Each structure stands twice: as C-alpha cells, then as structure tokens.
Image (cartoon, rainbow, N blue to C red; front, side, top):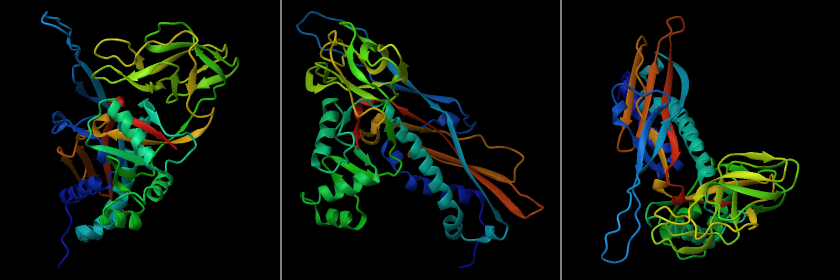
Length: 399
C-alpha cells in the first residue's frame, strides 16, 4: 500500500493513543478533564475545584438534632507543563503512521508518560497510613492483607484498589505468592512477566518510578509536650539537642492514640499514623510539628480515639537518615490527575490538540518548518496537575 503524507491531526491522535497506553500509576487513579478549557486553552496555574462529600453524625431518639453541613473541597492546580521536542525531514513525513509512530512518537510519549507517573508518585509524602517494615522488601501475602486492612478501616471501597510496587518488590512478591491458589492463566502471566496481576483484592503493577523517602536526621526520645492537644500541629520535646530534623513525609505514631473508622468512629485497634507535612529542624530538643491528619477527637471528621497524653512516646518510622522505597496501595479516588487543553499558538506551520475527556487526557502538538534545513521541528506538550484528595484511601508500603 502506498504511503500517505501524514497530517498533524493523524500524528496528534496517534500520540494520545500511545499516551493512554503508556501511563502506569496514572492509569489507576481518578483523572479529571475540565471542559471549560476545551476551546480557549489552559495555562500553568489554571485550577480545578474538587468538591468532597459532606460528612454527618447520627443522632439518637425522636428529638431533632440539627448539625451544620460542612462542605470541603480541594484545589487541583495545573502547574506542570512538560514537553518532548524532536525534528524530522519532509521526506520522513511521507512515512506511514505506524513507522512514524515507532520511530518518533513512541519514544517521545514514553518519556512524557514516565515523567507524569514520576511526578504523581511523589504524592506518597501526603499519605499518612503506613504498613511494612522499613528496610525489608515486601514479599508475602501479609503485605496485601495489612494494606487492605488499613484501607478497609478507613472505609475505602473494596473495588478499584491498586498496589504499585518497585521492581525489587515485584520480583519478591511474584516469588513469595507463587504457592497460593491462582488460575492457570494468572500463573502463566507471573511466570512470563514476573508481574502479579490480581491478588488479595489488589491489582498489582510494577512501576520503576516508585519514589524513595529519606527520613529526617532525628535523634533522642521524643515525647508529646502537653496534654489535650488537637489540630494540625503537635508540640513535642525530648529530641536530642543540636541538629535534629524531621523531613516532610516522615511518618510517626503516638502511644495510645488510635485511628477510628470514619463512618462509625470506633477505634480500629491500630495506632494512628501521622505524616510530617513540613520539614523542621530544631536545636533546642523541642519541636512543633505540622501533621496530617489533624488530631480530631469528636464530630463528623473525627480521626483518633483520644488526644495524646502528656509525655506520650512518639515513634518515627525508619532509622534516622534512612532511605526507603515507598510502594503505594490505594483506591483510585485517593489521587487525582488533572489535565486540560493547552492553547494553540498562531504563526506556526501547524498546531493541533487531541483530548479524551473520558480518559481525562489531553496533549498538544506544534510543528514548525525550517526552510534552511528542510526540517520540521516538533514539540509535544502536556499540561497537568496532581493532587492527593483523599489520603485516607491510600497506604504506604515501606520497602
């Protein structure tokens, strides 16, 4: 069949198809596309508002007990514009779409998809729930059951759960779970690809972009400083005087402070995990730590069974300055990837956009022409933003 000169529309649609297939972590999260930018185009800093459902408490008896309906929302900012640029000749424009795709689009889009996933997996630092042993590669069935228990205790829906692991954990788990009952097709897939597929209520996928967390250089025997503390900060002491630091993303527990189920507000029997939301370094041995979730002891948004006692012991996960992979178990609504159409520039050879609102994806290709070299410089751009909307629907599996 004779080759047909490629059009910018053909190239753009093919690029979007490849992007949809190449995404790893992003393929398993909630994706948002804002149609208000479908014609005019969005810019860096454009925002999408994500409204969260109202929570209520249940009252006893026939007497009416009104309560305020508190609406909350999260702002998703499209703050990342990434592109890949390359050039080709007018002769190469006569290639068929499959050849052009293999030579140019697939390598370019693979790089873009890799960057989108890499940025998204940095959201681990917003997640406070935590399982696994720091310094030990996840390798057996309790990895799944422990993560599933955390998610279920946080009222995460049973479906649409994914576990994203790094290559080391993927290989270890494929070996560790091989003796469990699986369909012959599932075993065949494990044998051929080294990937797990479905197990323990999770779709398990490997991603080389799983991030590593470096624990702060803390020291001492940290304690809560003052009883009845609530809110998003915690006053502490007992740290070693001198340079003692916590990093954003560090996780700790407090003695006798237990998580509660967000629906029935009963203790889960598991200590509440807290994540440090801002890095802090202090030389006095005392720190006021910004934390998530907030310590809330009553009401619709209750998070713990009780506020910490004075001098309650604080236990930081991982050794000081240790570096640990942060595999992620999550329900798809925990994280949101937002995309919108970029503006189409004028004064260029060609420009086109392709978007798939159902898949929440959009990209733009701009092509120009250099008469001196007979080259077509070309760039593929995406505009996106990531947000951890429901951290309670995710759990970090330490490696």
